Length: 217
Image (tube, rainbow, N blue to C red; front, side, top):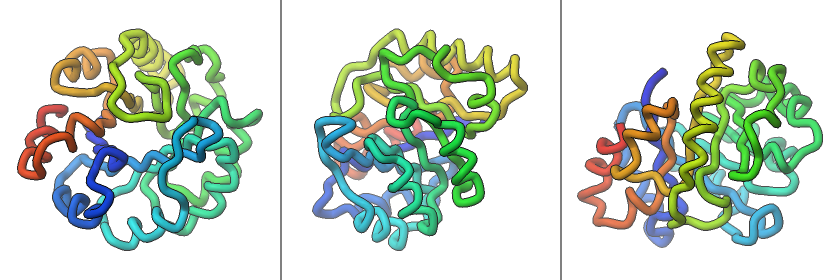
C-alpha cells in the first residue's frame, strides 16, 4: 500500500484556507484531512457541511473527511454528492457500523471507521474489517489539535496489520494525533500506511509545508 500523508487543515490558517490548500496541489500520495466536530461527540466545534462543500469545489486534491459527530448517518447522507475521497465515522458513535457502511457503500469511494484511544481493536468484528476500506487509529483523544502522541496506538496498528493479513482484507491503516518526524519511523514500522498530521505540518511557514509532508513518507 502507498505511504499516504494527510495534512489536517484544522491546523491551517482558516482566514486563508484556499491559499493554504493550493500549496499541496499536484503532490502525489496526499489527502487533505477534514476534522468535522459537532461539539457533542467531542467538546470542540469545527466547520460544518456548507464549508466542506465549498472546499470540495475549490480543490481537486483528494479529501478525507473524519466525522467526530453523534449523527454520522446524517452527515454521510448530506455529503454523498460532494466527491470526497474517503469518509470516516467513529465506531463509538453508532450501534451498527456495518449497516452504516453497507448503506453508503455506493455513495463513497472509500469508507473508514475510527476508534478512540480507549477502544480496543478487538471491538472491530472480522465482518466489519472485511467490509471497511480504512481503519483510523486515534493516537490522541479526538477533539483538539496539538496533543502528544499515545504510544499504545502502535500496538493497535500492529494488531490491525495481523488482522488484515489473516482476513485477506484490504483496509488502509490510518493514524491521527501527535504525528511528526520524531515518531514517523516507529509509526510506519508498526504498519500505518496513512498518516494524519496537522500542527507538525502547518506550524511553520508555507515554504516548509512540503518538506514537512516529505519527512513523513
